[in-house]
Structures are given as structure tokens and as C-alpha cells.
Image (cartoon, rainbow, N blue to C red; front, side, top):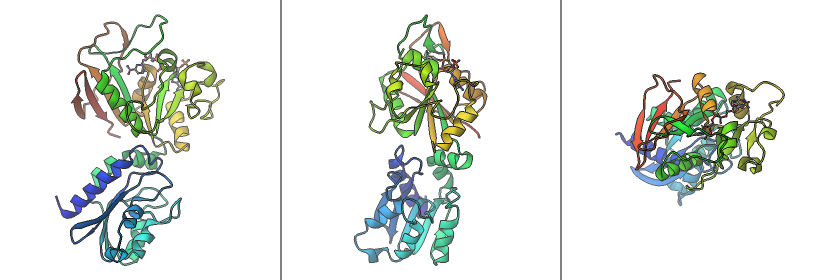
Amino acid sequence: MTTDEKYINRCFELAANGLGTTYPNPLVGCVIVKNDSILAEGWHRKAGEPHAERMAISRVSNPSDLIGATAYVSLEPCSHHGRTPPCADLLISSKIGRVVISNSDRNPKVSGRGIERLRNAGIQVDTDVLREQGEWINRRFFHYQRTRKPYVILKWAESSDGFIDVIRNGNLGSHQISGADSSRWVHQWRSQEQAIAVGKQTVINDNPSLTTRKWVGSDPVPVVIAFRDDVLDRKLSSRKDALWLDDLGFNPQSENPSWDEILGKLGKKEVNSLLVEGGRAVLDELLKTNQWNEIRRLVSKKKQIHQGLKAPDLGQISVAACYENADDQLFIYTSAS
Ligand SMILES: NC(=O)c1ccc[n+]([C@@H]2O[C@H](COP(=O)([O-])OP(=O)(O)OC[C@H]3O[C@@H](n4cnc5c(N)ncnc54)[C@H](OP(=O)(O)O)[C@@H]3O)[C@@H](O)[C@H]2O)c1
């Protein structure tokens, strides 16, 4: 690993601290280095709060130490006045000598302009250090910038014999398939995504709360694939932040909207990422139309259901990674697109 890669890698670690809290902004980490020694570090915590570069620079107690130092940043410094002033200007006025960047920003307000501004000021700028790793860390942001739709993660739990639910015969209530460790994983995943979607029948049958109560972090915005009046007296009806199809501007008298339309409407609300927790009809539709980016499939090691609602069929999609805990295996799939 080169010195530049070492510090950019540290930027990634710092950036990851913001996972789940920076939406709709990207994850960014910054390290200020002089004579191969770290002067200060920073990361972007929340939209409206200081960017990573500003946080790092503010932590250098003696401003003259910044003269000629190298700023490592995981994403191209911004050049526009948003909720905070441009970071490129701050780097210039701080007399930073060199800036090393992993990814250029695809946000049209920034793309290439931050780099250009730094170079015009005589600062050496090196780009694309560990570029692919940086793209993976900010995959939700880059996907949103490219498509104006949320990055979609499908998640479900299935029994060892391939069912996601029992036969209901009108019985309501949630039927837990995965174990306690997986529950914590799922709650952690919820804390990392901006929104979480469930289908109408899942709300009726399971009445989920979709919170992160077994993990620290904020709850994602619930998105219910139903109209309000169709699902009364369920937990999500009382969540003021929940988005129902009505809130996305769809008309209950018209045909059910397509997922292309639903994702487009969520994109208009600046939703960068969406965790989809079933049920089967919703998962099937997203799989069939290839509107997903990742799948997290929990498979119980022991629990059998024998007869019930079959898990989605993944056909030829191959596993990207596999983990396990005491009760379950976790298979991860990533979309090629
Ligand atoms: N094991 C797991 O991980 C897991 C996770 C979640 C759920 N589940 C289980 O899955 C079961 C429910 O699955 P399900 O397939 O029956 O139902 P579902 O996917 O939760 O909901 C399907 C219904 O949602 C509505 N819907 C779907 N797409 C829509 C769209 N684009 N626009 C408007 N409405 C749309 C439709 O209602 P209308 O037909 O009325 O329009 C559709 O019948 C539950 O019993 C639950 O326990 C298991």
C-alpha cells in the first residue's frame, strides 16, 4: 500500500462514521498530513453541518501548520455555496500544498469544479486513489446522482426449507424466522439506510414497527406500499414520518403504480437509499424488473416451516459474500448494473 493509499484508506474509515446520518449528502472523510504525520482528521456527520475538510482544518490548533500540508479527502471538495461555504476555497485560503482525492463528485454542482478551482490556485491535486473502494463506500450517493432514484437493498429471512412465512389462515402477527443475532444485524442495516419499504399485506399481517430499537441510530423513514385508508389501525399509521402512496402523489382510484414510478417519486424527495423488507409480492416485482442493487438473504440453519409462502426465486444470481451467526446464514448478492 502506498502512502497516499494509506491515508485515503483512513479517510474511508472516517467517512463510514457518517453512514445513516448524512443523507442526502455523501460520506466523506478527510485527513490533514504533514511530514507523514496526521495533524487532524474530520468527517461529514450530517447535512447542514461542516464538511469533512472543514472539520479537519478546524481541529488544527496552529493554522500555520496547514501551510504546505497535504489534505487527503475521500470525495472531491465542493466548490459551491450550499448550506456551508465551499471547501475548495477553505483549502486554498489555508495554504494547503497538495490535495489527494479518491473520487470526483458526480453532483453536477461540483463535478470537476472543485478540482479545477484547487489547481487554478496552484495546488497539486492527485485523484482516483483507491477509486473503486471509494465508489463502493458511497454507492448509495453515486447511484442516486446517476439515476435520481434510491439505491435499493432487498432483505428477507427464510426458513431452511425456503419459506418466508407460514400459511396464515387469517391469523395476524409477526412470525420470526431469523435468530437474535440476525435481528441485531437487521436493525443495524435499518440505521444505515434513509428509508425502509414494506408491502401492504406485510403491514396488515405483521404490523411491523420498522425501527432500530436493537441498535443505536435513527430510524429510517417508513415507506408503505399501500394507500392510508386501506391499512388502518396498524403501527405505521401513527408514524408521522411514514410515506404512504398517497404522500408520493399517487391516486387511490388509479391502477397500482409501478416500482419505476415509486422509486422516481422517492428520488424526487431526495431519498438516496431504500431497504425493502418484503413481502413476497413487493420483492418479486423488484427482482423481476431488475430494480435492485443489493440483496441480503438470511437463511435459518434449522428452522423449518414445511408449508407456507415461498421465498423469492433468485435464479442464476450468484452469491457475492456469505456470513453466518449462531442461527442463520447471510447471503449477499450485488447487482451488476
Ligand atoms: N420472512 C421475511 O423476511 C418477510 C418479510 C416481509 C414479509 N414477510 C411475509 O410476507 C407476507 C406478505 O407478502 P405478500 O406477498 O402477501 O404481500 P406484500 O408484498 O407485503 O404486499 C402485497 C400487496 O401490496 C400491494 N402492492 C404491491 N405492490 C404495489 C404497488 N406497486 N402499488 C400499490 N400496491 C402495491 C398490493 O395490494 P393490492 O393487491 O391490494 O393492491 C399487493 O397485493 C406477510 O405475511 C409477511 O409475514 C416475510
